[in-house]
Amino acid sequence: MSINVTRRQFFKLGGAGLASSSLAMMGFAPEPAEASIRQFKLTYAKETRNTCTYCSVGCGILIYSKGDGAKNVEQNVFHIEGDPDHPVSRGSLCPKGAGLLDFVHSKGRLEYPQVREAGTSEWKRIGWDEALTRIARHMKDDRDANFVQRTAHGETVNHWTTTGFLAASGSSNEAGYITHKVVRNLGMVAFDNQARV
Amino acid sequence: MDNSQNIIARSATTTTPPQVRGHVDEVAKLIDVSKCIGCKACQVACMEWNDLRDDVGECHGTYDNPTDLTSESWTVMRFSEYETQEGNLEWLIRKDGCMHCAEPGCLTACPAPGAIVQYANGIVDFDSNHCIGCGYCITGCPFDIPRISPKDQKSYKCTLCSDRVNAGVEPACVKTCPTNCIEFGTKKDMLARAEKRVGDLKELGFRDAGIYDPAGVGGTHVMYVLHHANDPNRYSGLPKDPRISPLVGAWKGATKPIMSAIIGITAFAGVIHYMTKGPKEEPEEHAGHGQDDTPPPHSLGYDATRPRGEDR
Image (cartoon, rainbow over all chains, first blue to last red; front, side, top):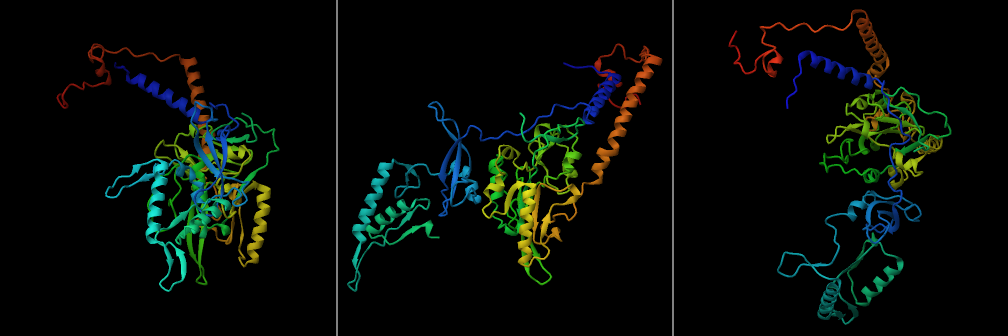
């Protein structure tokens, strides 16, 4: 389709366009004003209290998710901020805590046990039962082989130095107590925790 | 939706804004530069709340990351290494972002109706739906804050979390700040806190400590406590006496009514001319020019199919 516009018509159209747009720009065509231009995004969000996963400070966080938990919807975390009622952090978060949302949705996040078998380069997904069984087997074998009851001088030590244990930092006192009991009862020496820092 | 954030000024709009509800407290964000450790939690919280994710940049040998405000980084920490006359090094860290001026240069300069609004509580907000991407807000801003996005050619800056403030909670940067360096409240309360803090700093030996609330832009709703208020320039070029560019005054002040008048007079003259002289008659096209019986492209006045210079 072609539109035939004469020189005269072109100038008329152009002039009318320029005049109307200039008039609008000069404020002759005001639009209705709204009272506020931005809606609060947490309205109707589900709020869940939790503890930041990163360091031993253990700041309180509020996790906001969409979806009310009905059986036909999947909830989705869309915002995380500090918990003002938490005695440790009182609502504040460091840059890592403030960016937890991307940590939750990270593609690199570990969500299930994986194993890289000896001689392969691939990570293979395994079930929790299998993972725990295999870890227990490894620990038992290693402890049976390397447990030291006495030193060369005959001193009783009962320690196991060839396996280490790294515990979580965002645990409660009770969880920490139990972890300590389990690890030390086995005679394990290399036991670390970010709460040490 | 009616709320506490009545719009009291709107860009390129001449209608009078509602003014009856006068009991709205002005809010302010107070940034105590002397308490800032430069952790950038405010930057992260700002991006998280406002659903922004800036591109991962490059290290330029400083802690500044990103090195400047962008359309997706509405606040950045600026790190300045300043050597005093006594030879001491001062590491001055300033959280840069919109100052929410009481007399906003961006709003004055903006030609797009409703693209920039100012609420009764003092927050200056951009409504990007109405933005035409002309960039006049950047010219109008004495602090060089707004940035045009290369993605959609619209202007963006800090909103002082107007949505959060409207819902009764503090801005995201204020809430997250681990050192209590950023505080939020009514402007009156924040000024009182700032004065107390300035007193403390003076006792600590910072004789020139003071509040940054520049009068050149009618005061701001983001204020700083500076240990060297006599020389704000030290803090990565914070202007000592910010003023709106006189160009903005010319464009919105004198030029606008004059141009409006010229348009009006032209239209009026056109009507008078029509009434006295009548419509202009189309002159009869003379045969022989080939205008009447040639195909459409010829109405442009030349024959595009004919080789150039054939009849010259």
